[in-house]
Length: 306
Ligand SMILES: C[S@@+](CC[C@H](N)C(=O)[O-])C[C@H]1O[C@@H](n2cnc3c(N)ncnc32)[C@H](O)[C@@H]1O
Image (cartoon, rainbow, N blue to C red; front, side):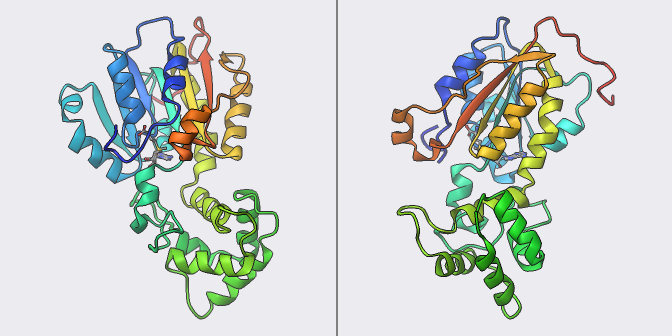
């Protein structure tokens, strides 16, 4: 994966989690395929395994077509473009998996491509959509949402304690010049907030909040996890890597809500080693949790709309 521009996070820990499966796995759903780092490593590790890779980003699937031709032509890898939530909501009773993985958030190639608008370091369009089919961009949110709505998202999703001055300045400035570029917004936040923490751009939490809203990331996780738990075969394993405390809380709570049909594989969340963080600083906020479906669990046939 050296040339993909994305280093898969906690690879050894993910492999160790799935290694607790006590049958030969044949089916794997990777809901956040990205550059296929985790997916192809699992396919290599388990010769019996076939994977369905889901991603809403056209560029991710194009990368797979360009680099994983052999896996695609042998059908060990199939691809599905769209949100994993859309996929989860249209699953039928025959869509069942030994392994399911969600490695949430954005990939390094998405962050590093300034034309995608995720980063305040380059100057790109204020976009932040993971998939081009999505309608709402970050510019739409910034230019059209009310002052109260903007305050709410920065507080709730960005965990910004006091976003009032930034939002007031946004609402003032957008009357004459709508926001269209990342630097325009990042510059305003920098002017209003100033640098409080060395090495941490003052726009970090604001950009994170916008990205979560534009891509309905928390809502998609909340809706999809129960569907994925139900789509596990008895004894199957769901692994979720989060990068944000709100995502981790949703995962932790939903695992807890399903203890009647499975168990948490790690009571204490798994985090990357210091060594991994040194090599890949983007892994520093990653958290891994696993859910094991009870081996004798019977699936509820009324759950699916087949
Ligand atoms: C952190 S990367 C995954 C990296 C991947 N595990 C690898 O090793 O290459 C997250 C990927 O998930 C995709 N993604 C995020 N949320 C999604 C969603 N709701 N539905 C489908 N894809 C999503 C993003 O477009 C991105 O490509």
